Image (tube, rainbow, N blue to C red; front, side):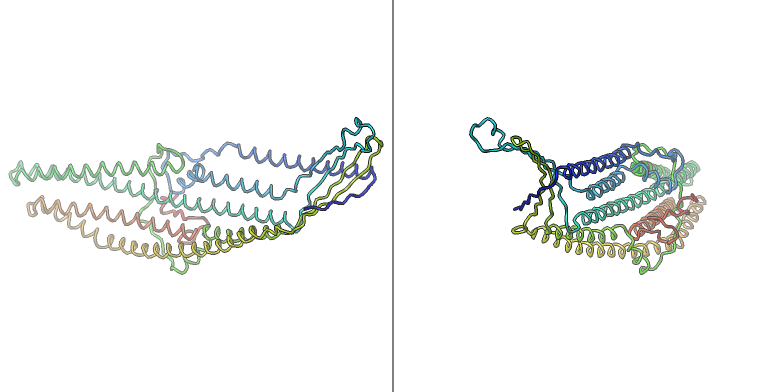
Length: 461
């Protein structure tokens, strides 16, 4: 329901006002087109080519950089940031003016003895938003852009962690392959030794058969290790969009370790996690949207001005009108209720996110302490004992003091202990990577980056 008021002005003033308003609109349109052209030119810009040579040996830092430059999943989140920039630009735009032309009694001249007068009206109107609606929209759009940044940072952190985990898996696969190759060389020596003992009549022929069976088993383990390594290498290179790995090997030290801080320190660092910051910013955005719904209760004003031409009288007059909606039935109650409930929902989601991250940190921290203790026991007790037992059994077998089964059991125990040690080291680094993802900072707190790329894990890179 609108109320209109007509006022009379001089023709010169109204035409001058119309000209100024038209020029302002054209100027704004030209400026907007320039901004949009710049944005479009940046959007179609070709992606950055990789500055790293993938055919070289890779450090963890190299792998992370290749992923950041070429991962399509991360690029999609970057496009969303650009989209939010456009939304912010649009939120700051004023409503377009409206040009209206109307003609009444157009057949008045063709009707004799009529008192109707033919006239034509040209009206130019502009909606004026009241109550700070435009500022509220800009604020909500700005927060939306910050949310997109947080999403990008979260995905970036997730992908860096994934790269670090798969990199560690490849590094462990290389080490397992080295052990398998050493094991098959050792198994070949056992076959040769058993063959000599059988030929010398010091052992029955069944020992040679058992040695060959053990050699075949070791060869199967070697092939399986090679296949696992090939799969891990492909998983790593696929993170930067290459299904055929070009790098020769990855460089690192599985036996590197860090000083684990207290749980309280790690818990404090978790406050900078992009997921936490996103949940907090999400509350701010819904509060901003609630403010927009509140401001929509304030009616806007539409100003109009124009000229009216009376054909029969050959006269022209200026007109102006003002219209204001009367908030009688619709006070935007439903939208305000929905926005208010979504604020509460965002607060609940923030609390749930905080609990989930703290639970994950607690579980990961305890597992890390257990993994650290496991590595210590393996390195200080199990591996030295298994190595010593194998050396004694192998030498005793050559001297005829130990049976073939005793020597073979010692060999198998040593190999299994070495594999268990590699698995423990791999799990240790995966847990460190997970803690760094949860805290969004290096566990040793020495670098300002989302995840630690330790130099001793890089091979000094």
